[in-house]
Amino acid sequence: MRIVYVDNNATTCVAPEVFEAMVPYLTREYFNPSSMYEPARRVAEAVRQARQQVARCFGNIRSSEIVFTSCATESNNTAIVGVAKANPQRRHIVTTAVEHPAVLEVCKEMQRGGYEVTFLPVDRHGNLNIKDFVRALRPDTLLVTIMHANNETGVIFPVAELARITKETDPNIVFHTDATQSVGKLRIDLAGEYRHVDLLSFSGHKLHAPKGVGVLFIRKGTPIRPFMVGGHQESGRRAGTENVPYIIGLAKAMELAYQNLDEENRRLARMRDRLERELRNRIPYLEINGEGAPRLSNTLNLSCHFIEGEAMLFELFEHGICASSGSACTSGSLEPSHVLTAMKVPFTAIHGSIRFSLSRYNTEEDIDRIIEVFPEVVERLRRASPYWDAKRNAPREEAYHLLQEAVAVH
Image (cartoon, rainbow, N blue to C red; front, side, top):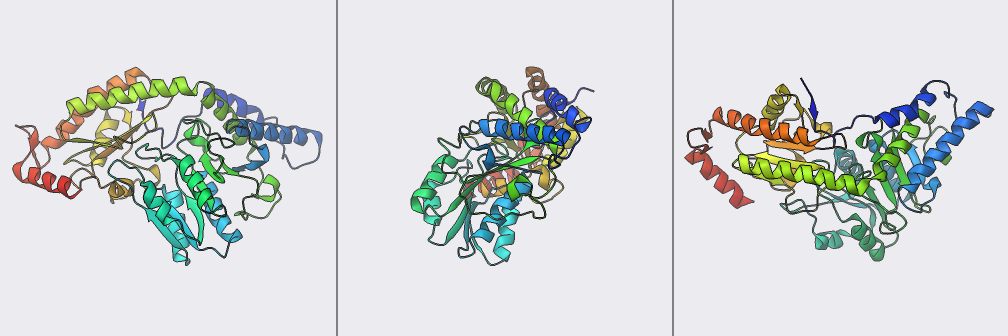
């Protein structure tokens, strides 16, 4: 059975070119870059060049502002906790209600530790209200941490504008963005349009590098304390022997991602839009989550009224299609997505969400296969639903009233 993999916001395959770049550092060039002999110095030089390569992808920034970590979760924890340690006099954090758990749960932990946290709401399309954001900033605000693009819906937040507003309000407020879903998909010039962003996090495995490597951009002069201590690596900002093969792989993946970025985004958008259009035409009572907001070109999140997302995922995999019902970090939970809850998706649809997320390795044939299979899956599951009238292919009268009430509430 041919696998159609459309869960690339959860993780991506390692690109062949990335694997090839890594192999020497998994075999003959295995030396510790902190050692002083010649073979180790070669490895240290390779890490230095990789750091420069990653920095070049963000515009004219210093390579010393790039810190290698194990993943975006570590980078996010370092950003939030490290800034708090360096600025103990400020006790207020601003974030959103739709952050990835790697930010959301850290902020909740900070709240339990005595910090005040403002969780900004979003509208039905997933957009932030700029006026709400401005009102949230206070004289004691320590940190703003707002994601660049949402992992579930693909909705893009105006991070450059939010960072500018933050610095114009108070230049001592630190601005952090979790850019895990946007790096490799959007252009982020940290020396230009995004020059007010102090900290930026991402993971390699979202852009065809391996799992186990990430980055935290720390703009020079940003007050922050190390989160991991015990060694001198990363200029004293992150202890632990460098994961050399994965760092090399990440640099190669960044290079590949930005070679034909605009052309690839147009290709993915065409496929995503065709999938959205065809499914909307074939499936009644369908919600497009994030419709009307700027979205990543590769992401389509939809909800089907009166059926469960888990059942849809199981049926799709029976046909070789790998998708997701939300964040991979919260799979297995019976609770509805916190992102869709914040967006006020009607309760008749909130459990029936599916995310299709594409990559450079997806083809038009993959889209054809989803269009062929998914409407049949929805129809079959709805026939078994007590809320659905199979003869009319519509909700039963009492279920329709529930739907009307749910839509009216939201």
